[in-house]
Length: 614
Ligand code: ADP
Ligand code: MG
Image (cartoon, rainbow, N blue to C red; front, side, top):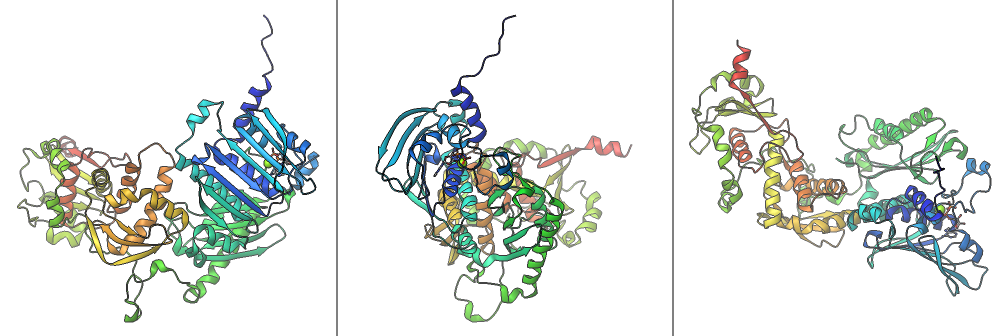
């Protein structure tokens, strides 16, 4: 048999290798920003177009490159940062593989201008798919500017794999945060499609965090500081009351590099034990400094996962340090409690003396209670699709069979006892009860219907919101006193992105461009006391939910809204609410599944019940 192994041509090998380094525009951003930092830049500009698909440009005022270096920098394994294997154990720079520029140049159109301080003129190089297209001498400012255009132009499959501009921009913003948070001394400017997203002046860590995540963040930070032989820890954790429902701001940096470490994350969570609920996530910005030889950052190509020599010790130190910081803060919570406009009484109630800030959801609020105004507004999709489920009830004798369950009800929900047999106002005899504050049970012709209250309500709200977002018929409840809420830049960006849908379902905003947004109206189902919480969760969940990029905005929003506004397990539903739940569920287009594809109800057939008695 003839020999069949061939060496791949260089450009093919380069493309393959590039895939390791460059997954998406955000990878380019990371590599270019890191190079600028390694070059000692004091001011760095990041310029993005169309989520980085059209352009990623980084301009720095660092050391620049000589003509020869400029050309060499695009060769694979060309680096100025290490010269022997030994150097790997004492890395002070972000880059060291000499792969990034070669990889990027293999799969994009790259344009570089660079000049060292000692040279009068600079070098301008253009490369397309690893081929040098032109090289000339130019007059250019000191430092380096690299533009990366048309990423993956020669790998259509990779290009098609990219998500929407918004999603790619979000990945880029994440990378930008990671870099900007470790280098507060460097001034950063970030422009997207011509408008500036961030202008971060040179400052200290705390101010940098506040500049990025909004001034309200400043008051939420608890400083963390510890120095031992193994590790030096500095940074901040967020006060427990600002823990989030979804992973929010969680940052670990080791020796100036963003890292991911589920193990150390666990140490932080353990320090918060007892202070936040188990389904909440604490925010943190933690900077670890360890001996460079005790850390292996080499185990993962994108370098966010690390291996520490002595992880167990690190875990213990981290946990106790944070515990200590939180403890100190807890000793004097009132003194330490800085101003948070979110908790302000929204109108001039301030003179009326001290009352406890009330941010809990109104207990008497009944999400199923439809006002007559709302009812008369009518939603035709309910009526149209109501036919299918009616069969469930055919032949059912009203009020039959229910006695058998009364003892269960009395035992688990004694407060419901009085209303069990009451009329529901529409003339039906009530025929539902709540089981374990989790299920609503009723009888249907084939047996016993058990509805999962929270999933069912999710389904109802999901269809309602989806309808409203698309046909714009949501009813708004005008707030007598508009509520002022503060948001950071990312949150504002998301709010603006989903503004139209929110308006369609009944939200009304003013000042949506500024940090302090005025809410002047809310959908009827949103209790006034919960507006801030609902919007915060909405933004967080939307950011998370949308990152898979596969579904429409309306759907993601309807899901998020339904998740956050549905009744939960553990909530008591009165008789009227139980009946409304049942009616509305079976008026849905898809009553059997929650928007998250979970079963909403089941029917235990008479036959099954009979069997138990046989
Ligand atoms: P690495 O950063 O791993 O060394 P890169 O491919 O990212 O590899 O860069 C190759 C080399 O090009 C670097 O080692 C550095 O000498 C030079 N270089 C890249 N970007 C810049 C920049 N912005 N300013 C000065 N030199 C740079
Ligand atoms: Mg590099």
